[in-house]
Image 1 (cartoon, rainbow, N blue to C red):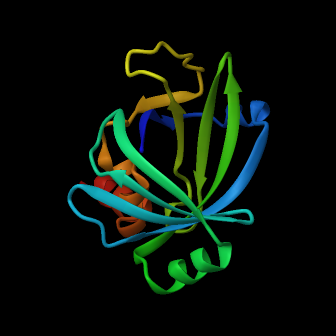
Image 2 (image 1 turned 60 degrees about the horizontal axis):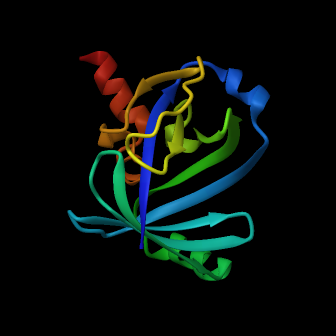
Length: 162
């Protein structure tokens, strides 16, 4: 087990693209988790993985991740996952001595761009480049397990109409 300490932000400008060092498309889906955990299968390049995370909104969460054969991941994604699939391109963007992972969502979540930074401790200071927008670390709507079954386009439209 590892403890994931992460802060999550909306992105207000595409200026981060200039600093991106690499990018990779990812597809992932979720199995019937519990109120305590989410279970994900992911395909990233030639790699497949299973991930179990504690299902709490906030900065720190327990996380377990295991590599599996890509063919198994493809099969699980196609046959066993609940809700929709998350399709995104992850970009790695260095900033000072830290690394932001900027997820550019596709499909039903097209238009949503979220930046995450992993920290060693909840109290760690970190750079906040000007292209970062509102912090959404505590807003579960922006977690991938939620976006898979409640796509951003649908709830964004409802919010805008209200």
